[in-house]
Length: 198
Image (cartoon, rainbow, N blue to C red):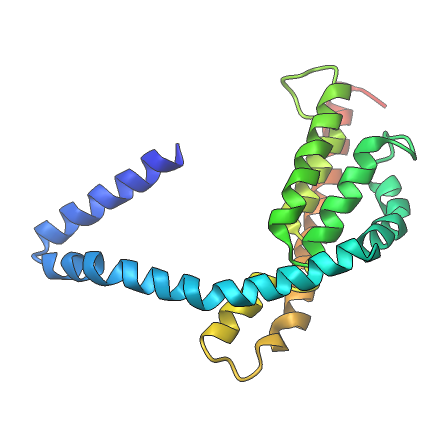
């Protein structure tokens, strides 16, 4: 689907350039675009490796596991239908904790395992459960303590203080997560009243 969407954008851009007589801009982008992308990748890659390495050291040292353990009581409140020792709860805690520290790629397997566990308990396989929706909201809101990718981008483009956005990032992602969870609960209880369930 995404390939089709980008293909449509590409064709529209070319047609628009032909109609407006601005084909030179397209030619310049075709020539210069790959070089800019390669420069961006080569500039960001070492920084991403550094930050990911630091976070992986924290993971190997057991710091992430400890953080996940500390957060389990909070997740028990957010996922009351899951047992305290539910396997999915452990995967959810690990996924959110790793995301908070900016290692998004490393958190993906935990997120997939969490959804798989939740789906196995789902009686209606075509409809997401409350826990699945809440987990998706948490993941999308994405409370972030260290935005590794953004810090790397700011460093690459010569920011005098790449880490100055950390407080704003925490505030923004915390706000979006809280708002998302509030809407999740509002729609959940509205749906329960609509269907007369308790």
